[in-house]
Image (cartoon, rainbow, N blue to C red; front, side, top):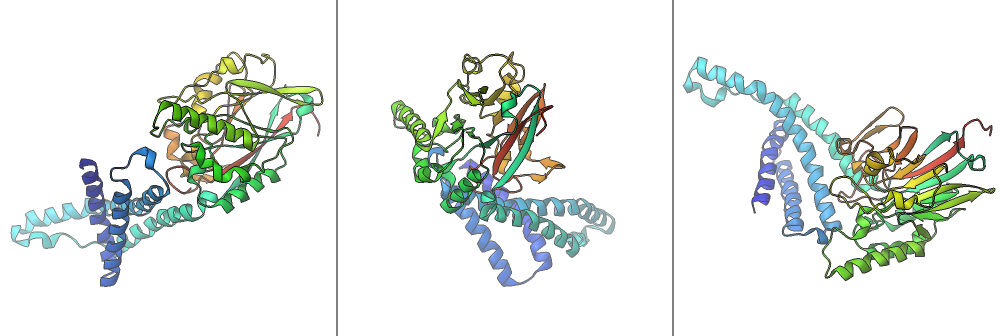
Length: 410
């Protein structure tokens, strides 16, 4: 009850300011009624969906309830910040007049709010409001194909021009537009890459979430096959199970589903991709994440059958694994492919110039290509979405990486 009381208190404080801005520019009774009806409906639906909820029960109704709260709360907090800044000047003026002109003057000496400041506040607040609504309605399926070319001196000559497509974080349990999922799968196939690599989190929690999309993802095709690893959500750690056996069965079912789709699941193991009698090593580890995330990944075990001098591509779901273990490993991992962060599904990106998201405060490597100690990592922004049913500025990603050998004319 205390938690919900605090949530309601936050809404009250925010709306005290937001409504002042609204009333400053409009005295219309019906607009006032509409303002409060929408506010109370959104807050009421949020409380109804989340009161007494455990994580196992989280689904699309809760996701949308959370999204619409954000759509209202974030803009109103911007209004609060601007009007509070105005009060930094209004309140001292009122106190000065009060003490210099006498207590009988009272509250009338509090200057009225300036309409143009309220208009500016509401105008600025309209930007995140519209952006969040767009992110919910269209942004989550605004798939982008991001293409990179990476050059290596020791890439086997036969692999010069080799193309791989990476997808990550499908989170099939969140989808509500099968037609858009099918569109994205077609988009993947249109890249005609040599290999498709999936870096974990096929589901939110349960293998059954993937069953409606078996046929769709079963259409994925690549010349040298499909390979995958597990992400932290694939283990079923975030829901309650009737027994430990049920949880283990869920993981077995998910592994079977990956095989049915056509993915070769790499569980702390490696294989070789061959081309014209030359080869590169592809390694996959189970999830390893810094902090409280599962640490089932075993890099040494995955590399047990790999030669130190082989050209190596590593699939590891969480980019913190690259930071904490891979970069400084005795083996040189030329390219690591990760996901996990989703770019927080919110941020600002101007390709080739600027990239920002709050997730950067949690993950040093959170979206795109990075290079350290002569090794590369690509952190895929994710195919699907989780929690918030939308994306704002950080769009769902299909990565295409072309490998080039330095010094080879093509």
